Amino acid sequence: MSAMVQECRSCSTLLFPARLFCPFCGGDSFSLVAVGHGTLEETTTLSDGIVLATLSIDGGPRVIARLTGPGAEEGQIVPLTNDPNTTSGLHAYIPVHSTLNEDHS
Ligand SMILES: [Zn+2]
Image (cartoon, rainbow, N blue to C red; front, side):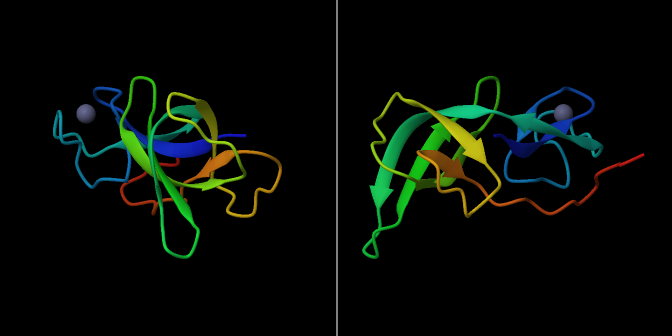
């Protein structure tokens, strides 16, 4: 299980959400890389029971994700997914971003 995030082809910075230009080097060419997990930093429970989490990705950005499954604790390594219907255990769901400026060749 993993989630796709944008990687700058010039400086290899991981970016989420997707950008038109790299904020670090100004590059505008990106590829998609799979990220397996993030470290849970903080959670917020909304009034309807949805749990949002801030996770840090190794060597990359912080992402805001929706937690699925029980038992999340700060500092825990949580698998990332692009599948909103993941039902087996604890996952952090982030939406598939748009494909602006991606070179699929
Ligand atoms: Zn860059």
